[in-house]
Structure formats: structure tokens, C-alpha cells
Length: 544
Image (tube, rainbow, N blue to C red; front, side, top):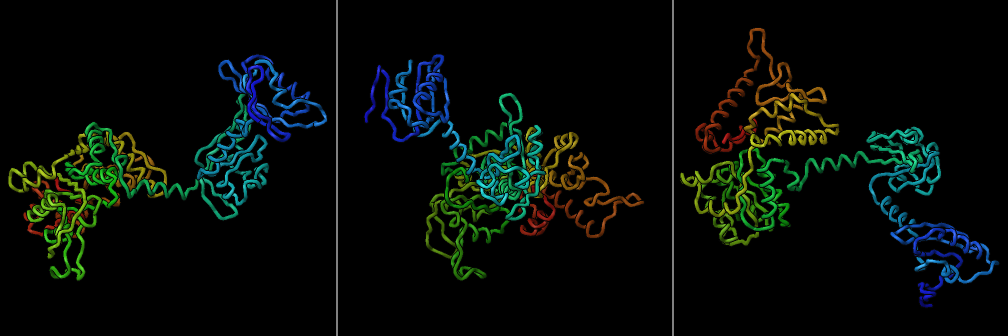
């Protein structure tokens, strides 16, 4: 049956069955609901539900009606309601507005990962989602209408919420039927339009899941620019520029002092680039020349003593369709410099001992804390390689130029440490913050992280005092980390401790004036590898 127009009004065909859901649109006026109710009552219909929405000069009426007295005569419901004055349109519908709202609410409730349970003013369950039901070891239909005492929650904070007292993140042991669970519970009273408590709702978060999430955030496998914290204009400018060029294949050269986060920045560029291959980092200063070449370019079987019989792929091959990060490229010897230049020009590598050219699709990002321009002028770095890698230079400012970022980074490191230990984070006292801001930070962000972790460990209180903020060998007397003075006024050290202190100071002096790690090793008369091991032992960095 097609739509009809009666007295200028649109009528839709009659729906089958004794129960109907209708939508009636009126020009707004007084008495609409009374007119509808009177007509329906005279024809033997009962109103199951009705909802009125006012839209400017119109009234939208949604109703569900049921024929309860078939003995009463009456015209078809469309024809009957079509005679009501000011009616603009009438039609049958499948769902009422409150049913659609309830359906959306149910979809959300059943798909969130937290447990949700609500009760009415008498403490009887009105809503429960599958997660909460599983914690309780029951099915949702078995919980609806039951009291808090019946489901074993009489002692929880919901009873307090019904008295108007909310609570947040209270750790609770949850002895459900499927075993012990530890949750963080948050509860809120539900109030009516007059402000009276009409019920309460409680949300349960699984502590184990929270810890796993915190662990993944604190130690991410994939770094982004969100991990590079800072409000300093230089940092913001570097991040903005890096985001713009991340998806290009152009060479990037990251400049900055040791400890400014050059590798973290390179990883963020790789993550933003969309390249599906891996990120492979190599410290050019940490490997002797022969080992550096074999690591970068690979080798064929039997090409030198100790080589694997089957050969080995180099890092450029390993990073196919990914990124190779050459850290401290200024420390790279002349031989590998020439080969890197050839890789950039030919986009292929040749393994040591081999004659086959292997095509590569690998982006190269370099980093250094040296002045490459001065090294080129002094013939200590190849000029042609310099121009190849310096296409898109990015400078990361040292921490001493970023004082506004020090508290931000310190709080971040405290949160990371707390996440790893599964406890609330420590906070810095005003005096401790002032001490951090007064420091020169030669070790930059890396040094700040070490200082913060040390302070959190040394402090016995949640608020970290200034005395726990320790730089280098200075620190609070009598702590386990620092020796105390004997009665003669001298510091008690064992022979091994005295030797370590002397060696550390000697290394610090040389590293402060040496142009490079290789230069420092030569001055000390030890191998490059031996110096790197000692620097790692004493947590030292090149001063320049």
C-alpha cells in the first residue's frame, strides 16, 4: 500500500500486527499529547511509551502503542491519528529514540576493556558489562536485579557512593569465582535532575593490564616524536622540520652534543617515514676499522681468518627498505668513509671478499657531536662525503640551552622509573628542582636521566630533597654510594677504589681536551676498544 496524502498530510501504509511504533510530526501547539492519548484510548489502544522532542516550531512525537481491547471499534490507526489538528507527517518506525540510544550504549558498554557495574538507590544491579560479570564469575543476566550483598560487593565503595561519597583508583583485591584479581576501582554517585543520589556506578581496571600498558609506554619498541619531550623553541623547530622531511628519502644529518637524544630522534624519523624495513644503528666510534667494515658491508665465506663459512650479510642489507643510523660518523676512519660514499652513489654494496653488487634500498641517517666543517677544513673528514650526508642537517640544542625542559624531562624520568617498579612516582622538592636548574649539564639529557634515577633511589621519602640530587662524585656523606671521612679527616678508600678514582679522573682530563675518542685512545696509549670499555665502566662521554 503506497503513501497517502489526506488533507495535505502525508500518511504511510498501515503496519501489520496489534503493536505499532510511530513518529508523528506536528506544528507545535498546546494539547498535542492530550489529543493523541484521547484518540488512542477511545479506540482501545494502550500507550507503551511516548517521547516528545521540540525542534524550533515543530513537535516530534515518538510513541509505541498496543491494541489491548480489540472489542472497541475503531478506524485504522493511521487514518484515526491523521485527523489530529496541526499534524504534518506520520509514519511507522522500527526503533524509538530511546531504543537507539540504549543500543549504542550497550555496544559501547560491551566493548570497553574495563569492568562497569551500576546499582540503583537500593543497591540493586541495574547495569553490568561482560568484563565486570567475568570478574564476578557470573553471566550478566544472573546479576541484574541482585543486591550488593548477594553478589559479594557489600563491603566495596559502592555502598559509600550511594551516600554521595565518590572515590578514585582504590586498589582492591577481587576474589572472583575464576580466581584472584587485583583491580583499581573508581566509583561515582548517580544523581537525578534535583541532585539527589539515584544510584552509583563503579569501574574496575585490571592492575596487571595497566602495568603491561605502562611497561610498553615506558620502554617502547617504536619511538615517535611524542617520545621527544621539550617545549624549547629549538627542539620544537627540529621536530617540526623532521616531521616534514621524514617521508622523503633524503639524507639527514643530526648534530648535537653527546646525550642530546640523537639516536632517539633518528628512530622517530624512521617511525614517521613509513619504511617497512628495520631501524639498524651502528656506533662508528665503538668498532675498530676492520670490524666496522665487515659489520656495515658484510663478507663472503672464508674471506678472512675467523669469517663464517657461509658469509654474513652487512647492516645495509639487513636494513633493506629500512634505515641505517650511523652514529658518531665523524669518528669513522678514511677507508670506510670511501666505501660509504660509494654506497650512497651506487645504491649497492659489495661484501668484503666478494665481487657481486647487491642493490639496496636503505635510508641513511647520520649523527655527530663534532664540527664536521672544521674537520673537512683540516682534512680529517672527506669533503665529498660531507656534502652527501649534509643534505638535511638538524641541530638538537644542548640541555643547558633548554632550562624550561629540565622539570618536564625530570618528571618524565621519575614516571618511567615508577612504572618499572610498579609504585607511585616520586616528586622533586622545590629545592631539588632549583638544584637541577643551576647545573650546567655537560652530559645533557642522558646525564639528567642518570641523576634523576640516582636521586629517586637515594631518597627515602616520596619527595626528593636537594641532597639526593647528586652530580658526578659529589654526594651526601654517609650514604652507601659515597665513602665517609675517617677520624683523621681523610676519606676511607680501598686500594681498588683509589685506583678507580685516579683512572676515572685521568680519563676525564683526556676526554675533555681530546678532539675525538680515537685521539684520546692514542694519547693514553691504549686501543680504541679498551677506551670505549673504560668509558662505559665509568659512564663517561667525550666532552666535545
